[in-house]
Image (cartoon, rainbow, N blue to C red; front, side, top):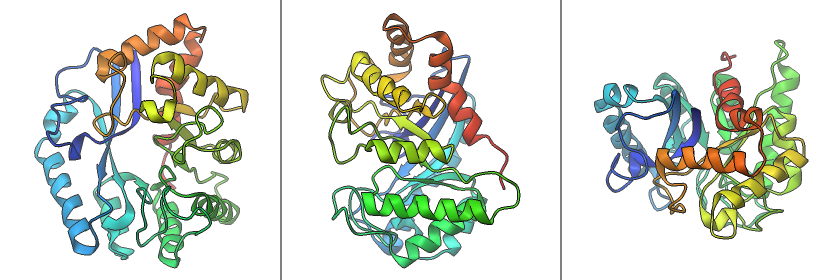
Length: 293
């Protein structure tokens, strides 16, 4: 089994690598893991940057150990760590950060999160930052972003696509968000948003948090979100965004063993092997490992 997980909060968990994600050797044939540095909304300016830098130092100190069990990919969750300075984007690119979740649930220098007024769009710095991210090949992540900000990101990605000569569409990610039509939660995306991500060849990583899945948060609940994505035309865009170590997960799905069980349950529920391989590996591998611009 190959697994590509678009989001976990392991680096900033109270006890890193002692929860859902550990550094024990995985049974997966290949395991690619996005490690997001989740910076709290309460931190601003240099305090937010220092929080990110501390987590990055932890990652670097254990990098060889991490790479012995998986293929790690770095992400920043919450643009407050940019401190309103575009030069920090170049620094993050040099540190091989591949994904930036623009906001968490509140307001920062880029814009407004899912718990803010849904009609408030990106701030001027947010527009500049998204454009610079697209130029650098860093994926904008719209998980946690409010609706107005979402649509402005999609507009900027569309303008960038029109200006490029290589024919490659800038891709937007929702690394750990689910379907609002299945479970109406402010953190989930409506059908128009999902179709917009599909149209730019992006990804929707399904989150295992029961509150976003609905029901008890079991494999059956996740299968409903997958079925909805497929009905909208998203079979090439559905991926896993577990949110391990950042949320509670149903015990049957927790950790690598839970993902193996999830694969078996999805097979029992009628998903073909090809569909499961696309969900767990191929879609994310195709997008994230595309050559940079």
